[in-house]
Length: 60
Ligand SMILES: [Zn+2]
Image (cartoon, rainbow, N blue to C red; front, side, top):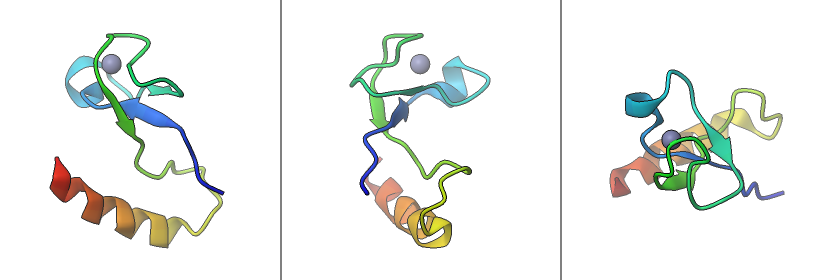
């Protein structure tokens, strides 16, 4: 199952915790939201998702 959850791309600068949303923008600061890194509570193959997320970060 693919997750559509996004996270504020600048949450480390603007918030003290990740801000998740289903929208393209952060509901708290209005900034861009990007596909979220695997959430720690995600029960699906957490190790595989984590490694893929690290690879995807080279885009940033
Ligand atoms: Zn934000």
